[in-house]
Length: 408
Ligand SMILES: CC(=O)N[C@H]1[C@@H](OP(=O)(O)OP(=O)(O)OC[C@H]2O[C@@H](n3ccc(=O)[nH]c3=O)[C@H](O)[C@@H]2O)O[C@H](CO)[C@@H](O)[C@@H]1O
Image (cartoon, rainbow, N blue to C red):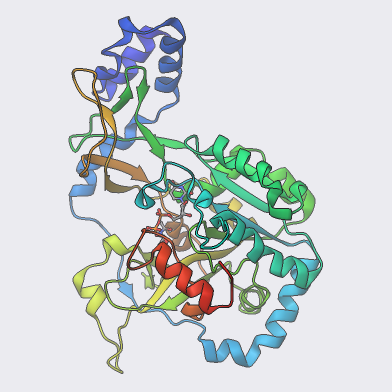
């Protein structure tokens, strides 16, 4: 992209300040900034105003889940069917690890965090070991796709290599990068993280399938005969991956997606909740749940929207191909964004100072017409590591791991 073209593009979006330091840059910096301007989608910054006006959602009503009791009664048949699908090579796993571990106060990828006490136990290691449980049970290697972002790709791939893939078959581990989005002030001006670089951040976990497609991984999926993708978050160290019983249940119900859920610990727990929206399965993310939604009770006096997602979904791959060109809604999230000020000084803010733009995986559910909310036992399957201490923390995850018999 030429300087003139860049200037024109920036003018369209009111972002001319991006070229403020252009004359002071080296030739390499100049060309890398021009390339970044070319690749950046600035249209997201226009959505701030739209998001501040009334959000339009459909009519939200409660949804039923397959409960623990029902699962227990059918566990044997579900598990056998799930194992059969795994052995036929129809199931792969997708680890979402493009996010940043900022809440843990670390600049490393979250999966590199060591939660061990007497020996190193990295989050990535715990996840690979959890996947091994099913590899051992089924006698089949399971493809593991790992989503990274520009911010952590090198560190992640180098770490896996250095750790010898934690004993996993490296031919079955595939890394791919997600896209980035610019970060902006509350007024929609993109931040610069240096004189030659626009501040960007991963564009949310909703683009994972589009990024897999972009990376050319669909040919591998087709050749290997993969029909189901079990997508899960990096931060849950008790995550059951490619769980045969869950797979069997989703198959039995003939659903296009299965979603593992737990009963919410309290109305304010930071989990997305399952519901129906205009009669179709949907999820309302925690920071968008209204007071009314959190406190509505059903006929038995129980919370009506009580099934929280743990970010473990089983997607029918062909159905994803059908919806992957549909644009997902954009969520605008307040964040702390490091930037350079008008004097060129680098600032790492202590308080939120602007917005990031994200699309979310949970919005994919609403595009598919059938979803099985599948209840799991919280203490056995949900130990999220979001913070250092307190709720959903390194400490609470350690306690849950120990409770489940793991040595740390
Ligand atoms: C959007 C989403 O799914 N939110 C879920 C997430 O909340 P939570 O607030 O943890 O969501 P985050 O956006 O922090 O991250 C969720 C996962 O997505 C990954 N990620 C995130 C952003 C990104 O650009 N790229 C990327 O790969 C992260 O590495 C992580 O594995 O977990 C909760 C359970 O603990 C769920 O109840 C929430 O519904």
